[in-house]
Length: 286
Image (cartoon, rainbow, N blue to C red; front, side, top):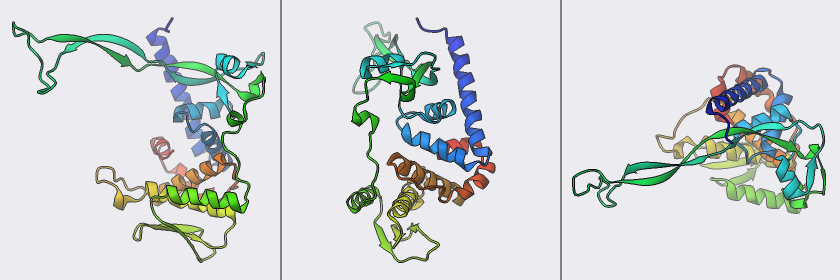
């Protein structure tokens, strides 16, 4: 039986307040390890909403794969260990409702009138969006049959071999909205995106990990900050700091998803940026 709307709203308000406080703490603390750990969680649960990514991270930051109690049992033949506390997330629970609405002429889109001049109505079923709190459990909180390899390891780690590296770089080139080339650059520059020439240049001679990290970083700039190609109504110039944090965060998450350890890299400016921005800007960037 559905929970009372008032109680459900209170629970959702409490949990969203917790999300806001948690995200604010991550950014305002100036602790870059906190931020990197948050991005790692986002990379593991990229199919989840931002709110649920935050909830999973705040409750169990080392989570790797989550599912409900029954799903673990029925789908994966695993059971939740006794005494384990579930991770609260927000789940959509829409319901259908029948309403009466005006019947429109398919050609004129105007209401159809009956012989007496009254508007003809018809019954239509609509879906009302609703949300409720549910519990999920991490893989480490369960025991039973080993997971299928494709579930346990959805993406293979990049080994660093030339074959995998070349394939990875080719995939990045194909995903880039602009050409990517490798050229000699000064040692203090890993690469850059040029809006003028609509191209990306990476520094020749970098390690494979550094090249992949820089490539993702610059492709993020080309996709998110290529204002010249955006429609006027979509164009919203951001500060340089915001652009850099967005690009570096994307690079870190993509590399983490594929098992590429990039280390601290260039997160030094995140602390300064985060202390001078509002939470809505954080969330928009993420």
